[in-house]
Image (tube, rainbow, N blue to C red; front, side):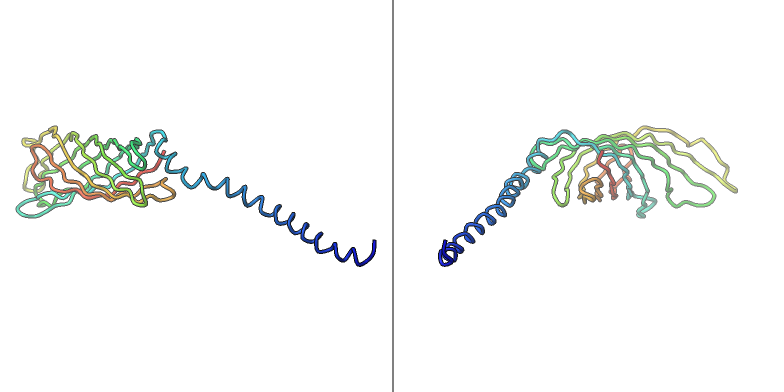
Length: 217
């Protein structure tokens, strides 16, 4: 074979080599693109068909109610809560829940000589709708019972007496709106809320503001 013929065949060999190298380099990219394509739409579809999810947490509530005269008082009510998320449509969840709270950690202002302490336990069940997005809006209706104990305390020149002490059961109804902020990919949800509350035989209840902190199970 002459030198001239080798030189003429050299560009063809280089072209074939470059074509093979290009094909081998493009093959992994095409395979990766095929693997990544279904993952774009998978989370929303999988979330809609998922099972019921549960969450437990703590609620910090601040009840605004009418005090003596025209003064407004604020009572701190901590609660334990449990929630369930039942998928009904893509990103839309039915959210039943239960709450158990304690009333009496804070008492309204009173005179030194005499005061009326209120303590109680609350239990309620609620049903809400929640939409899963960057922020999680929720609307809920709830009803429950409060076991309340009223204690008259006298000091100094005022004699302590149990003449007006009493225990009572009171019904409660409320409507609540919240806006949750998912943190750590939804493992923790911080949800400020506002609640319009009605307590039977107690017209002091007005509005409760608070925040729910829930952890996904």
